[in-house]
Length: 581
Image (cartoon, rainbow, N blue to C red):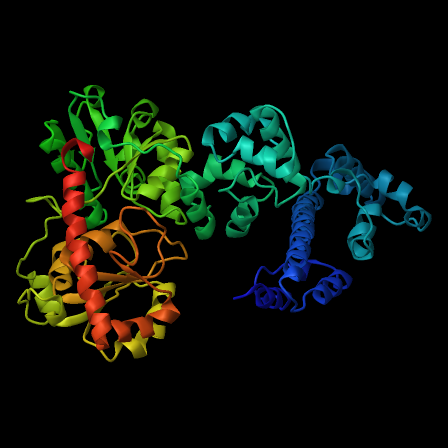
């Protein structure tokens, strides 16, 4: 959707729903500014849109404060008289109510009448006049209602903000033209963002985005809410494109190995949640294999409660599972502060927030995506890259194996003959991935193109961790057997992020001699588009599929990429063998 179309949707009330809380005159003036024009006009339109958002946010805060005040006023007025006060005449009772409302700083009747003499001259009860007429006439109730729309900055949150590294002092100073110490700049952010909803603390976190995602946060600074509550609650905080750019711009950040995060000579406990995603269990086994191969004494467990953690190094795989649903909820702050957490989630998801909450406590993490590892390093976390490779005899050495009973009983598959020539593989296209709305739309768009080829498509819906007991689950070894019989591995991102899915593209694709055909991915430098896999937008894929599978030139391209993939896997095995991992 281009900018002009986006603006038209916004004006029609189909995007952010901002217009409904603005006066009609303001709506008309804004609508008149949105017209299709040349590119030079887009900046002006965007400026208008930003101003609209600021106005709408201010109005929303005012309306929210008014609603809270009216609720408090209603409770006060509904409070029944007690004891002898029940027998007071109405006039005396009304005066007592007005005095009580003023004493509790809810409504000052005397102040209201001094500003609106017509109310005093008519002898009307000021609070009832305001409720019956004043609100509709736009009169000011005065007192606390006049100021409660303003968010008082919570300066006690400054240490938390600075520690999170979501506040980038250098970026903030340059972006907004302010100077001072880190603390001064953080204070400036808290004060300025109370009035300007678009004021950002850094290049990653957007308070306006977080507020739109979480409209219930009310009168608390969005960043403060995220640090104190949102991360622990697993609230989504980062936009896909913003997170991708943040990671890509972290190329100057150090990246470590797993060995840099462990104290030599100490035993290592590797923990995973027994009821969690089966893939995460495979990761835990893989880490154990790698460390065992280098002489570490490794204890692989799904429960740490019978282990003395004082004398061991601790690695927790998928902290958003083990530390939220599993035994890790019982970790003391001292133990949680020295764990190496293995992040396996994309930044735009709610699961990443749960993991980030843990990683910021220990400042030590591993990630299976090198860009994500560098992004974590940019947040002040000592982060290492954990490349998943099919080491001989290991959990990801999937080899050739008969399909499981689950696969053969529930699904019809072609005979597994393992042809040496990739062009003789019986499946043209393989897709395995859980189904969400985005993938469903993409597969529907590709339906006509896929219908002309032999495909293995498996897209179940899941409502929780993908365990081995789930009848719709296809395990990694089964996927590998099918991938070894497919020419192309179709990859559709689960969200708008261009995150490079290492396990899917490398372990399930290239390592099995299958060529990934994927939506554009962030460049990780190790595995390259056009050399090891094919990139194409969804709308470009039908033509690309037809060319690859139906023309001699396309088939030659498949063979070239297949050969490059074999060379890549041999090089990675050598490059990351032993302590280079």
